[in-house]
Image (cartoon, rainbow, N blue to C red):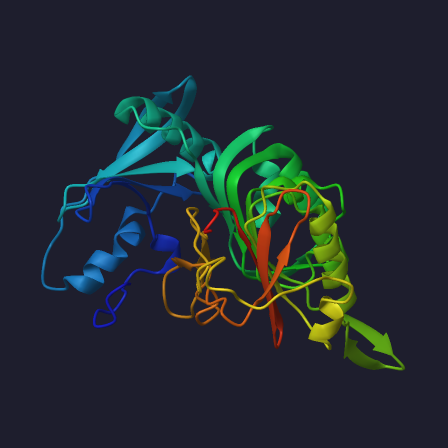
Length: 350
């Protein structure tokens, strides 16, 4: 599907999941697997219908072998197997009750087999989060897009079970209300939440991580007319909170929302213009700004840089600098239409 000149012949229910060994841009497929309703009445002709469409003039001898029992890490399950007549790559068929168990056990097995670090990167639907094991450690968690509006307690339950060590991101997942102040979401080092409704601007002071990119567009109803909520005062409170705190974790805070008055953001805060002798023109960080999972119609999911939404946002020549008296830590802040940027300089440039 990455090649626009080729037609994608497979139907969505025929698509198989793949285990790929990465050899630095020379990936090798090892095994496929697929979940079916029942192994007893598996229709093999339907499973390989896409081959008939692609190679109409060729005959394929496809044999399905059934009745096997797969055992791995103590997990026993029945499966059937077939081999792709073109590539020879095997496809294992499991029943759908193993949809959550099998990938986790496969991950554990591959970590041991290849003696690699046990970091787990996961893409999931939030509505399926109840299937996670208790106290699941995940390095990076990405949510699929969904227009379904969920109870925010579902997300709070996810963050109770999932120990997210590095990053969490979502582009589109609706809620019936914002999450609470005491959820463990605020402790995740890197947050990328580009859809409104997750958090309010007044909750920004709860974040204890490194980098946050949050959408806080809010509306209130005045005589039947939806009006945007002005977050100028909340941003001002956030800056004052940082100046009075001992928070040395924060590196960047990017907030999307309606700010009627940039002057109100800096009310009561001492600021200064850019001085080339004190810091560079562009923000510099040793940390990655993370990535987000993009969904585009007619294309497969793909990852993109989390900062691709803003053009040249690291240019801080027009930003105002604020300095925390307790430790001399400097931050550059700029307010553009619809977006607030704050970058903390952890390196000394004098």
